[in-house]
Figure 1 (spheres, rainbow, N blue to C red):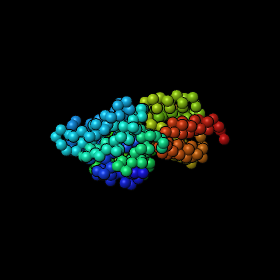
Figure 2: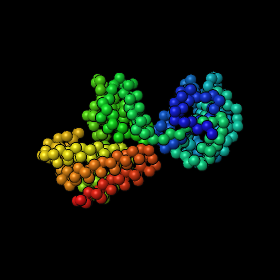
Figure 3: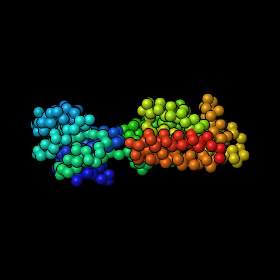
Figure 4: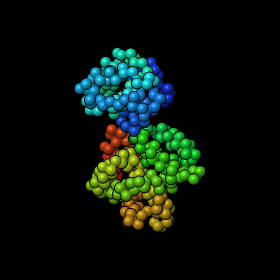
Length: 342
């Protein structure tokens, strides 16, 4: 089985092995799948924009015309040079076309198959993992370590540094899709252009505020014990394309603010002063909801909710297929806890 380990993937992408001309790139992180696919194509041909050097095929079409793949792979480029074929998998099985391709001698031709998440027993995955002339690259959601490295790489490319608290907040708000994460980081770097260091205020202004109204409504409903509203606002956020782990990360940031303010209140500070620690400042329309939450929740119960939401954010990033169930369940659990006064 030639399935690359995580530590070997970057090296292969930079210099694809000519003895293994067929590459299957798959996984639930479609942004990472696309990023790695494009990188392999760039490393395999002299000009990816040249239609004679870079062909694109549809997997669903190959399922009814499997011979087309081998014909395309054996085609000699018009002006010589290296050649690459990108096959985008769809919903139909084209494994027989790939199985025929695996028996053919390919000269200066790279075939890259781009697919979504594949079960372990999926025909396409099975035949590529068994073949000696193929490579299989799995693309799973970035964990905290990978996200931190991605942030640092993009900051370095923009000649910026990032404060530790800003990095921690950003990690909680991204993930699940590599391309979307990279775009958010680059947007943040562009916002901070002209500065030396990205701060938590910058993250609040650029990344956290992208869907702030929807996020605020979800958290406010949860801490008010309004389960039906949680489900309604959660569905709207998901319908807008917001990832579950991003929703959980936003709720986590809000409970962090609530917990900090509640500790200040329990230490004797007036509510207005305690709420001054919120970042960004509480919008006037939210003040009644935040004040009600601070009166209803103790710091101990907020700490428990904080742990629950942190686990949901982390678990949904690691298991994106279950992300909706994990995050929505955590938010509804917080809403149920809000109804109690113990």
